[in-house]
Length: 580
Image 1 (cartoon, rainbow, N blue to C red):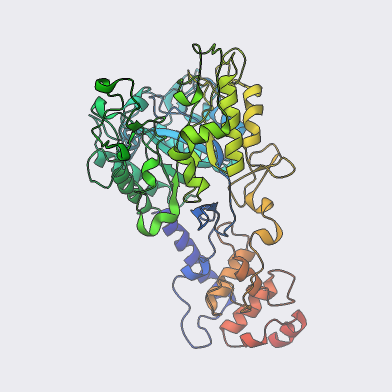
Image 2: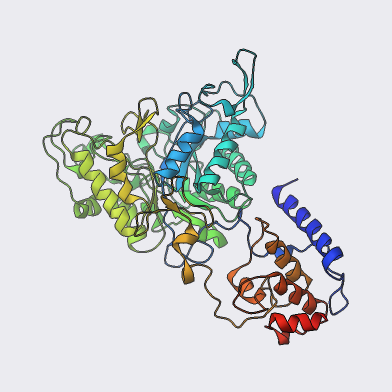
């Protein structure tokens, strides 16, 4: 039975119990109380109240229209063959997730593969799992009498523990299909399909994964495919146009997004770019090589970019999701000189000992950022999430300072434009960037963290802000919930419409459903809550004191015809007299 079915079944049982003991079985019109009170659950519970959407200003907002800022980090492992996060071979997974939250990251981007998701769907056994039993005893199913692990938890069960622990920390999750086949070098393959897994397999994996978490808003976003890339002359490459060609990433992204949204229409869909885009004004097309050796030395007729970083095609051919356009977030990747000496860095010398470099925010915008991806946020077309950015900032690895300079400019630009981002990465085993931890995942790189910290969502007091309305970010006491941040009139604002006193579920009428919902909320149920309008409506006895049992009694009396809704609000003294 699905979680939502269980929820409605439990709600029906609660409603029946309340009806038998506390309320008549018919309303003023003589109608029987409904067998199910789905309408009473109009206010989303804590598993459904954190979904995000895009407004008309290209801002990502919560269900109340409040802008949010996703500022997260990547942690890989599920895509490379570990069957778990890398580092769990030495560190405690729960502790690591606690530390990620305590350091202020409110979103975790998790690279996976089509292969591992389909393995989970069909319950195929793990080939291995890199879990240290000594430091992660909670991830071992059985030990022998000597304390030697006999059976580890299945990798999907371990993953669900990660989801549970993220949830308790107020951290949201974005799953990223990093590659088709599980492989540490899988990201080098340019497309979302390969010789082992087809486009249909990829769509199946997306659909199944999204169905699994449709009733858990811990998983709020899907990155459809990491870094589609490739050059025309390489044979296998991703393109962006209005065709239905197999390698057309725009068409594939539309299909992938729908596979997700058909299961959960509330997911944010992250759509990366490609690598090469033809300069059609110069007569180029999708067969034009990025390097034309017949005209070597002449300017290329193809606009290059970082893998996944070229979103030029969106300008004329945006992804079309119909009614789900409000779920689209474009997601480029951007890196610095130590990853590759791109032309816009104007470098002299060999890495890492560049003798000079010349770039500013203005030059990066002019030569690369603006036309590749920044125009989308500058022109308020769509929100952006920088899915990967990161690198070395220490003197040993960046002696020239070029990489630190680039990172600083990008970080500050993202802060200024409120570009969402997930830093690459938590792992220490990313060879060309390093990570936030070192010493076999045992220690934090304080220098790098202090560099990243200003780009994390914080209030004026330096408290890190969760994307969860109820759960504060982390356990250290330096995080707050979304409701904490948008306190007072910023969230659940006092309704401007006239009140319908007694209408707890805010559906425009007062009946037994309102009574049952009020009783469930008063019972302390964590699954049900009132909207701002519903809470104001339900406060109908001694108005201003909030929801009380007297309010529920008054609503019951209205629903049963013993009191007119027009008489509300009333005092508790009058209610006692009416009860006789």
